[in-house]
Image (cartoon, rainbow, N blue to C red; front, side, top):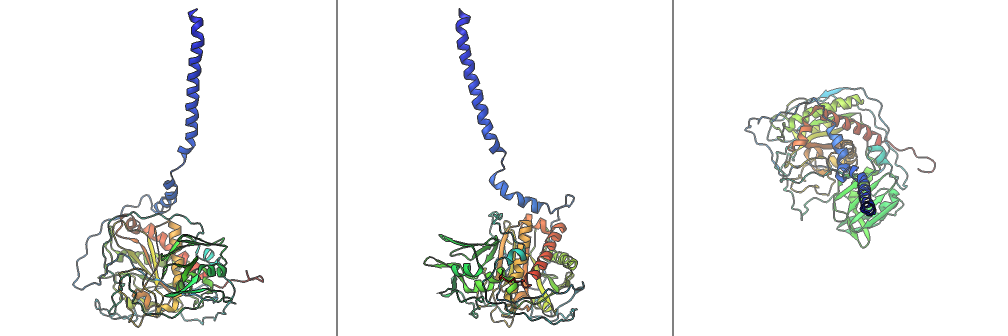
Length: 518
């Protein structure tokens, strides 16, 4: 009787236990797939660590800490902020034809002429250059609406809006010697609420059927609707302060009240903030003509000329050591980078000229004098940045357009210099070259994008050739400087710059237009 009575009870207990085990197993099974997924931030940063970390060779030893150099009696020019600057451009339309494959020659020259420089006596130099060939004239294209496919094809920038890695926030940046400031007596920079920039000429709008809508807000502004129609963006969206213009190959994003503009996720710093009036988003006329148009349509730049030579300027040198980094001095890294860039460009069929090939001081005027005396050339000045230990990333400068302020506050500018407008003759080519180099390096290595900026560095203001100043990272950041001190990293960046120059030259070539105009 006892065993008969216990039997149903035992069966009930067993059933309950089985049910509990089954429910627990089901719960674990449902949770398992989510546990196997990588975290959100891990998915975002995975490509970054693989791209940058993969540059190093496994057997490459860590760089050594630099020993301080003895101080010189000569005074060095100083400046405050941690970064450098430059940028600008212009737009219109003019085809260029590709140059014939040049013979490869590498030349090192000293400056032919110099600006007044109190820190060092003038130097003389001879420049070896290739014979000048006649530059074919370009025919202006008909005034038709623009296509926005140029940038993705020419500069190799992805249209996908990836999330760039953010640099950590740490102490405020330190000050560093800044030899790129103007040589002549500089006008003090204006405070943020004042603009002492001399007024520049009103730039011509891209040729159209007269559909540009101009709005006066102190400066001339153009409506985003006009930009959408002219460049055939498939959509325009204004959501609060955010503005998006989209096409199958281009995504352009701006924020009303901000000078930051993203084109295919590459950061540009505008001359004036994006504005609004009523329900209209507005972009300044200067930014449309000097940045947006030459970046979207490089083949329509009417001032472009065929080039086959690249003048490579290694920043600083001699008694001017530049920034002192964690693993070395800026002047040494700049020279090593210049030699790597020379090799990369030579392999791609370009002739090259170095402003210095050893640890020699060259005046600022002497640097751009080499470029000005070299026919059929472009000019790339190579530097590395300094700042607080947290500051990192890549930035590229082109000359500020006439009538606009530098895109960074706190720098001295020289509006009285006779060189003030020399570089502005190449505004459109300057910004196109800056875009090609900056986009290639940032996208290839997923480095922190500090933007394409504008400033009036002396090496840019006096240069009559297309010119940029490239900052390859922060020597004061331990991670950046470890990369900068690595020959593998420098060679990889040099390869990217070489590819970018090839893309830039191709981008200036006119498009073949079919019967339909597309």
